[in-house]
Image (cartoon, rainbow, N blue to C red):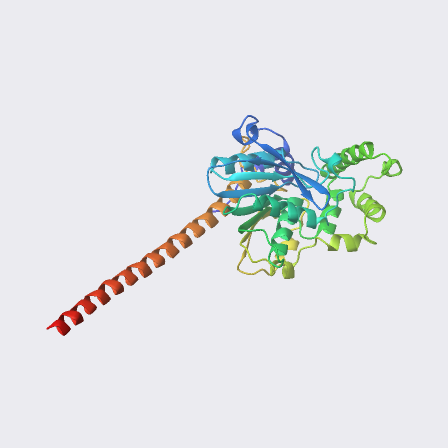
Length: 360
């Protein structure tokens, strides 16, 4: 039986992609929101915002939203609420220039900015010594989460206790994904409108640095990306820029923690061929469903999304493995102690017998 099998009226990819983005079925007064603490993380002069909700177990999940999303997007709240109900601490991390964070930094956001977000995750993990740390992301946030996991496998100062990573609809080839946005008229226009709103906010905050008036007639996300990258980044071509966060088989071979990915064949942004050509090791599990759209996986009009169950299960499975490992260690330690005690007692008996023989 398929993990995700929606009713026929919810199967179209555009319904799966757009309907879950509507903030229905999200409890705005849920404790995960009411008790959230704002955190500003300082990374080499860069400021990154996160919201932390405390739990009841020694485990924290750090979630990263998608492009032009924010930490109160419906998918972030649904997932945070479910994780909170399972006792996890939850940190919702803002990418630069998303949500209401444009004022925190002058430089424009782009998808290559891994360093600051890796350090932000590392700092959050460091705040909770002894906690198991889990990472999750949606769309571009999933791409970031996977890159953070790969970097963590090779740096000298890693994210302490990072145990597993899960990603929902992460793009592997951002060039193709950006082109796909333009091909889907309704989705492309919506995302372009969202991006222009973000750019206008940046322009108002830093008028001495930014003036995007000459770009306002641009109707292609790909073309606008190229013009902004060439004007406001160190990259000399679109290919060089997209190459910084393109994920292939070699990339996945460098990840040493368990990785779980949920994606769909009918994703309007990510062609399934990107996943078909991947060769991954035993640490990486890819679950591709026939339906689901892009960060959709909507099971009913009650707005229960299967990605919530997928993420919770991925972290709970790892927690079970850790508990079993701990019990095994304790059992082995107990056996060693019993053997040592038995050896000491037995040695004492032998010594006593030898002493009695000498006395005779």
